[in-house]
Length: 234
Image 1: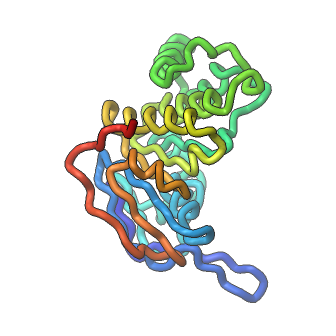
Image 2: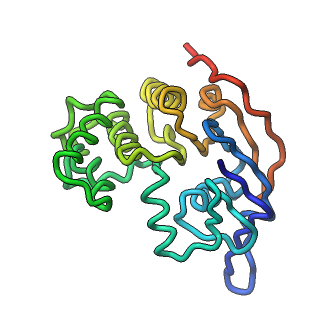
Image 3: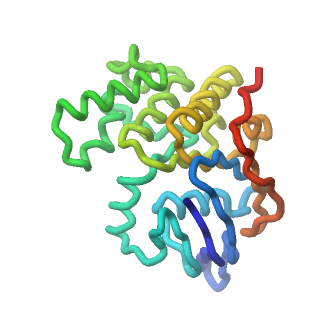
């Protein structure tokens, strides 16, 4: 589903060139649940942003579902991202003046759907992540775990094939983190979503099918995909 070939991203900082990704080769099959680990500055979030179509590579190829994202314009990337990717952020990125329902509705407003179809999709997404009873609440009225559930509902409401998650449990206590990881695992298993997750917490990798490690923009170690999802740890 996802393949990178000599994928490189460079930034210029004064007279220096910073290269968070350095000719990275990687393959992510459809239906994978991949955890990305590595020290700060190793290129994890940069890779996530490239896969999500938020940023563009400096060189190399990024093939996703037979589309080379490196060749798309800014507008082309935005359109591709809207149709194919759901993004889950560590700090939720919910709009504080909107209810949970309205936050989940935001991505659908770009798809030209009628009100009735939008409502059906929103209700289904909120129900799937177990937060339907909080649909009328504002983010300030929710716990961190509930906010992240709303963020997950927002990520899946357009039915994207890919979900990218940047430290999705980094701001949560242990019970809330466990609940969010169970949700991600079920989305991968039951809805066949391909999930790429950046994490610093080795405990969250137990929920993934495999883990890859980045250092200085390159893959340093990894494991082959498993044939079936692991059971959720107790």
